[in-house]
Image (cartoon, rainbow, N blue to C red; front, side):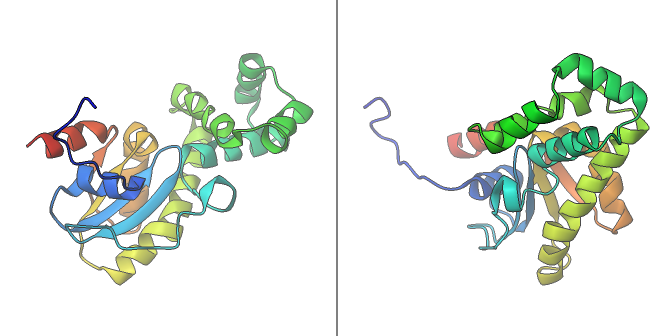
Length: 198
């Protein structure tokens, strides 16, 4: 009723990410936010893929994947003493509470993603850096490397909160695979607004 002269398109997140990262140019676009995805964009539409498997079967490298890694390390008593103490004081959780939130309560992916703040607050801790690097390694092997194999020499772009927040770690991990990331956009909405308003 308000936008009476507007054309409305309903598309998925990888389409929005592709426009935000590439506008009308070709490239490979990775999403690393609460979830994860990757696709080749031909300048008009993203290529279909089999990656969007959600937080249970996929989303390697995303916020909910990082949450899973953190909780698993906590429950298996693998966190260093200082991180374990901080985690316990901050979240006041134990095994039964965590398992109930993940397996019996709704919105488990939101619960897992909520632990991103712990990574942010401890981003310079060596152990947390290792977890982040492991997550990005999985992302590259699962999503980016196969897409690059099909579309070699294409520019690589990223969007999303995890990519933007930990872009130093993401760039370092990508460099180990001889991948040069052209751009990282933490909040793609502003690029989309710019694109559609011009």
